[in-house]
Image 1 (spheres, helix red, strand yellow):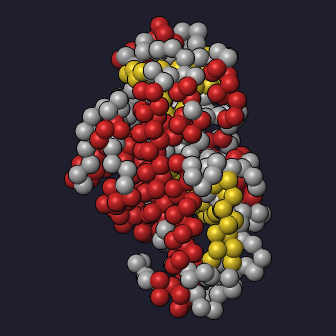
Image 2 (cartoon, one colour; image 1 turned 30 degrees about the horizontal axis):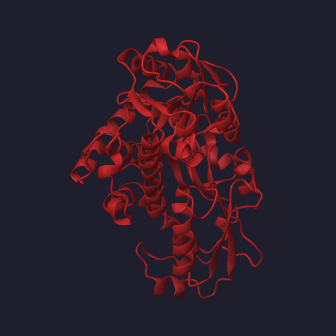
Image 3 (cartoon, one colour; image 1 turned 45 degrees about the horizontal axis):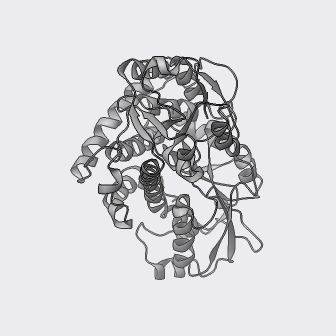
Length: 425
């Protein structure tokens, strides 16, 4: 696996958008977490000799952190509550960090953007208001052009209920680790990436009536969440608009918009199937995903090395719980569609071609090739690990296994092959 320092291939990552201007916050929200060092902060990172090897036990962490002042990290989750399907990651991170640190690190969870708005998370991390956060850089394309280019690249990949979900999230993380410009963007904004790119769940078109062919899209108004989905909506012949996250349900209900491009997770969280029960997707050219990242702020770097390693060592589980939430979102959406009399429609070939062509107009050819190569590698790995699509989206609730153990082999492989070499040392 290439580390960033080994990544020699240069490429231009300034996006060539087909439409100007930044797109404001819309639907494709992903459950996440954020944090802030409270009173009694860490004892500093000057005791680097206390670092531990991967796989350290609770007793070893307790010994290494014995001289550390207790800290409190405020974790701002994008979930609405601890019971929300999107809260898997924040709940487990709180449990594991507090347990392994033997109480030296406390996680205080708050929900929604109560400390920092989604477009201000990096500022809050840099000035110490929060210390850990799930941020959504596609909402700030002017500050994160490399990230936005990677997010656009997810539109080159198709959709399936399970195997493509696992494949694209691993593959895009691998590509992100090889993208120096992405890490330069994080550094410039004063944040430290722990999971630099999270592709999230499939983005689908939630519509008030069926949209299967190019004809169906003509004249439709579509709520989008990024510049790449703007380009895709326009390529289909629709008019794109950006709505606040909380406005979308009512806009669909009142027919102000005809469709909204939403992740299966966010569609589930907001009950969109009640007002937009007709879902369109493509197995060959997906809508570009509402990608995010799990990052740390200025005070994380001031923690003792063993504390930073402890937090980083939970990122494999955080990645797994992101996938678990995504897949559970798809599961629940399919159940809701059945209850609401909805339908799933695959876009016709002309629509899929238009979508992928619009992304090729945006994404640098070298990046497109790298994504394709990584996708092929991780498709093989996912298959070797025994993950298969035992049906289509409609039947997903019948064969989907969302137990905690179901994704263990996949998450361990991702951590060992992609994350481990970036562990603090």
